[in-house]
Length: 450
Image (cartoon, rainbow, N blue to C red; front, side, top):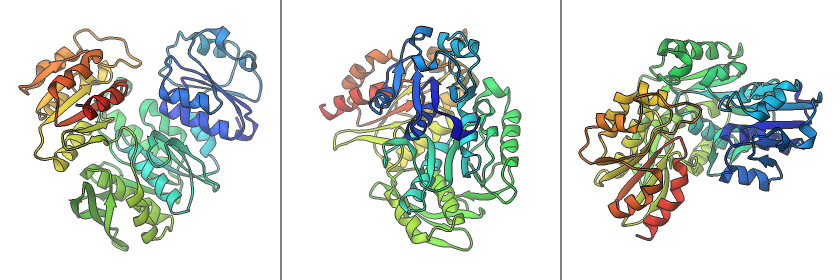
């Protein structure tokens, strides 16, 4: 389907972070946009305020009138998270509508554009957001589809006037194989989504296929140590692109960048942690490859405010510090905990963690337990199932039993705020990719008024 011929788009699962970005993009193009989602959230409310019609009733009768019958100019976009028995999804299937996954639509949009694609089992949202911000702040410009809400723009989509698009390339369900980038970044290839891939070797195979889709004269930036051939980057001196002299100043991470040709001293990054410094090295490398001036890049990096739910400091008072992060894989948790310790080495760390998916909890239970055991006080919520059905014997009680920390407990999400009020922690971290974000405002209010 050609982009110019699409006049109506329906999103089945419009409340997802990637789906909502596409919905905003098509609405900006003047296309009629409607959608369904199971739950009304702050994000879907924002979409409603932007003029997009959203229904929360999974009934054929809830589909707006202009999507009752199939038309050549109509596109239906769905997420794999939607159950196969969804009445709205089956309405579109039964009536012969053109159905596409989000990744396929990104492929349609990016075709014919200069595409910068960021892939990785973690780090891709922050890195793609950094690249999009640098391109926007320096005046180079880009359209961007991001997997998080950027704090600079309070949005997950940016609109550029040029032919450049930045996309977050999702490895889930091999979605990123719809893209043919001019510039690609691979941030990580840790085992994940084993419910899809079966084992790590098949995941790696998928990343190799993605790398092979790079255009003939394209550039591939690869985190040092990954089994891919490309321009390496890291905080290690052996990389082609390297961060050095990393230190903390006033809560920010400061570092020097070098690629063997260009050096940029004292880059100032508001997102803490060595892993975010390395994400920034990749973003700087991409910007330099596009011919953007180093001074402009340095200024843009300093003004990057981060991404909501990516190491977001929500309370910072003499009595309490509260940080929230999207981490939901053992390696992400480890990087997040390291960053917290580097910033606040003398404070007792209290962590609320909501495991995401039964399969991920099962596959990485020992790794999760090892990382979580390094906190001073652990509060575990029940597993957020997302698209999955329960697995016998896989629950938060099982995970709690593997954690060796002395201070650990299970808690219902509805009781978490009261528990934290009683604990009155000096340093609180909430982590997880489910609906733990609904606790953010109540916890923030509780700590601000403690």
